[in-house]
Image 1: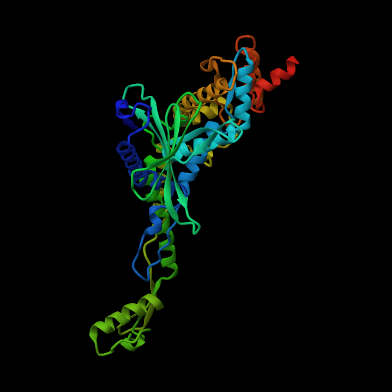
Image 2: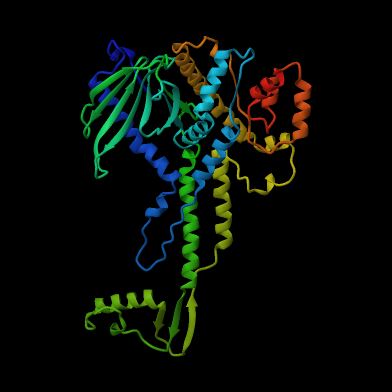
Amino acid sequence: MITIDKTLLLEDGTPPPELLLALLNEHRRQRELRLNVLKEYYDGNHAILSRIRLSGLPNNRLAHAMPRYITAIAAGYLVGSPVQYTLKDHPAAFEQLLGVLRRCDTQSIDAELAVDAAVYGKAVELCYADHQAKPRVAQADPRHAFVVYDDTVEHRPLLGITVSDVLDRHLKKARERVTVCTDTLTLHMERRAAEVPVEVARQAHYFGGVPMTEYWNNADETGDFEAVLPLIDAYDALQSDRINDKQQFTDAIMVLKGVGALQAEDAETDLDPNDPSAAALAASQRLRHTRTLFLPGDGADAGFITKPDSESGSELLRKSLAEDIHKLSFVPDLSDSKFAGDASGVAMRYKLLGFEQRTKIKERWFREALRTRLHRLAHFLRVQGAAEFDVDQVQITFRRALPSNDLEIAKTVQAYKGIVPDEILLSQVPWVDDAAEIIRMDTM
């Protein structure tokens, strides 16, 4: 999180040039030191891929997609089932807001935001008006978009900043486009290299606050696999070396004792046979390419040189590393035998207790950002003439994407009938996507 003193801004809420340049440089530093690294690991470009070994030695480099697995499980568990929005009185303005969410396809956007939060530790969403003056929301790349907060205990958003490259006709970077959003204004700027951005246009927006929202993954803004990157590197190295050992075992050196001799002229390159160092180099090359070693001796003998078999120890180490990765990332290995069988929903939750606790933390931060989204969109609709209602009264419900016991759910819904609003009860049914729509159809 980047925080500044609010008094550093100009009277209209915009940053002075030197402050804007400092903010851009700070975010670029974070992008180069951390965000780009997380993106590389998520894409499968691990440190093992740059490992170099001596010529002639096998150099298998296996990058395991554990960051992608952790991200997919964590994000899918949070928003695999669409987020539900309910309000007791169902005013017309709330129905209009729900229509905006459906038109923006926020279910897909929520999935993208959950993935970004799991990878980078935060996701960024931008509210904007399309060419028909209708409110829209879109996911922004956290490597090129960020929010600046004040340095008070409230950490109120002051600025939303995005940076994008402008390409020329040869698809080469010509300049950068910088967009700065305040509570009321959107500033469009451009710059070349690391220069101070120059304003080219500005316009008002009507979202009632900074139209850019960060979805934090946790209070530390860390990704779900960020803490286990060293363990993932160790797992990659172990598995790569296991393949290297297998390949070296297949290419075992044959030792021929007392049946021949190795001369410099046997080398595959042109070397001076009278040069002792050249003869040694020739022998080394011959050994690497033919996998054959000649030794002097009285009796003829032949055999292979092999390393001791350490496969059992390697397998134990592999399992230990894999368990540590899943344990410390709080994301379970669903292929493990303990998740097999027909378990009830309660039993499954006990097995996923650590994962569930971490997801609850993610859910709280995600819900806070979703409510900010609702405030921005509702304010835009009020400017266009919609009635006002209390957005803070909207119930935001997350449903876990778990195997469900329909009979248990039916009994639970029946037990709470008359105590909990019908819309909230229906939202707990796995195959109900829009509880509000079903209730409306029943009342018609």
